[in-house]
Length: 277
Image 1 (spheres, rainbow, N blue to C red):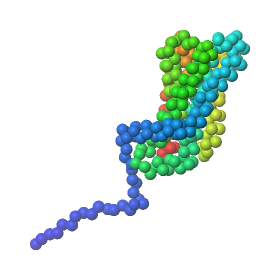
Image 2 (image 1 turned 180 degrees about the horizontal axis):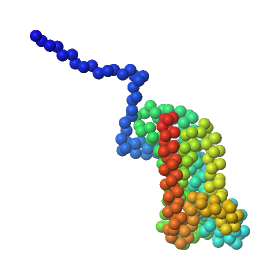
Image 3 (image 1 turned 60 degrees about the vertical axis):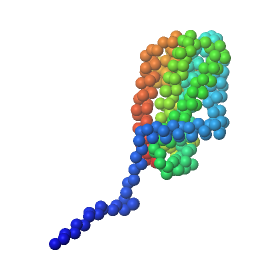
Image 4 (image 1 turned 135 degrees about the vertical axis):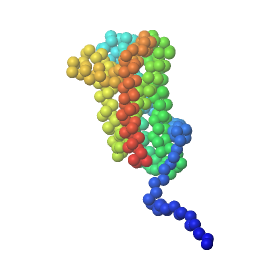
């Protein structure tokens, strides 16, 4: 007698019940992120007016603050330049990081990210690429600020190497802070609201710091906030580097502050972004 064996047929799951996953390797994620960063640079190339704030703000702020406060605070402009240039540098580059959240919200509102979802790329690439592309703006703002200080007579005693390290420190910290504004860009409803919320957070951090005036001239209750402000540590670290070429405790406090910001806001931003992406 012959026995017929019927092969087992796997259960067929309806298409609506399936959960397809886009498995992307780490290498491909990195490549996709740099491709999206290149897209961001192409946007700047085709619409260079996006760099107006990056190129003009350091010039205007340096001239304005130097000649308005220089005589009153330091007695003359030359004595004030070692104080104001690091302050202007930190304020300008950190302010530039607000653009990350604004442009992110604009792309999401225009449906650009919806088109990216249909492509076989890492879902995180549009977000990480935007953050990478904006570091070019930070580099431009840093260079222009240092050049303006040199034109006005600022001569960093720390040397060229210390200036480069100071610039890289500011760029790293600005990139870390951009995660905060990227989070606002993901959760906010419009680009204008992102800009409003970001500047509401940004102004206390930059103006309630040691960027423009000595801390000892402030009220006692305000000095506590200013001394704890991570932007103040960043500015002091830049002054130590450019003024004497030394790396003090403020240098490491600035890096620790940047690491804490990334540790808190990067997961929040990615989680909120993945829910919408």
